[in-house]
Image (cartoon, rainbow, N blue to C red; front, side, top):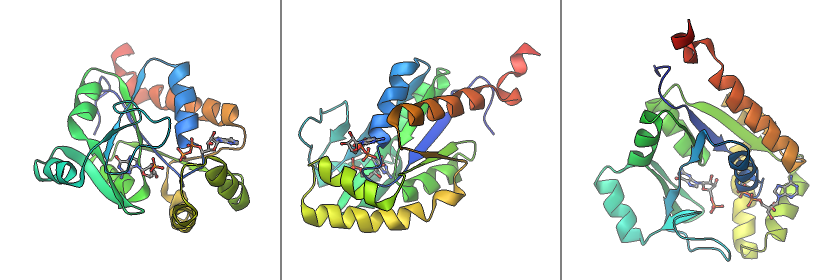
Amino acid sequence: MEQFDKGKLFIISGPSGVGKSTVISKVMALRDDVCFSISVTTRAPRQGETEGEDYFFVSPEKFEALVAGNLLLEHAEYVGNRYGTPAEYVRETRESGRSVILDIEVQGAAAVKDRMPEAVMVFILPPGAEELENRLRHRHTDSEEKVQERLLQAKRECEKAHSYDYIVVNDDPDIAAKELDSIITAEKCRAAERLNYI
Ligand code: ADP
Ligand code: 5GP
């Protein structure tokens, strides 16, 4: 199990378009004790996305080489693209005592939880299915076909929400960010994290 002096691991999942990036960015602005793990993906960058900030954008061949080299903590396919978490960053950051946030889909989340049972799992839900569709459409980043695929995937993903430790409903993004911030704070106040003060 996790030692008290090691940074914690927070897994954030939720359907595409629910506002994971929005809420995580707000939390990152509120605190400096958590770091965001930048994933590797074969997906093309969206307008406004920056290499090394939003993702490391790689070719399918490069992605395969990372898998073959055992350099990813987990990886999964999502709506025709591959996504993975660089293992070294998570290990080094936690070793330094800082916590790490992963924004990953449900299969990857389950794989990390298997390997690291101490991980805290948070699922972000939309206030309703219609609102999720609105957000995906209004983001203007995906074709109609991709929006439909993401909505289908969203239904499957939300069925897994009950197996997470916490659920945040993203109606107002500031309230959702406060809730996630509170979860992080509460997890850091666990007695097991404070043994050095006893
Ligand atoms: P995800 O990372 O889960 O795919 P994003 O953070 O990209 O989602 O958010 C999808 C869209 O919804 C963006 O246009 C974002 O500005 C918007 N959004 C996020 N949270 C809310 C909210 N609580 N209310 C309304 N729109 C939101
Ligand atoms: P998007 O293309 O909208 O940025 O991300 C699509 C999905 O991939 C989201 O559910 C997001 O959480 C997930 N994702 C992003 N990075 C990773 C990763 O490293 N591993 C896994 N398994 N999923 C990821």
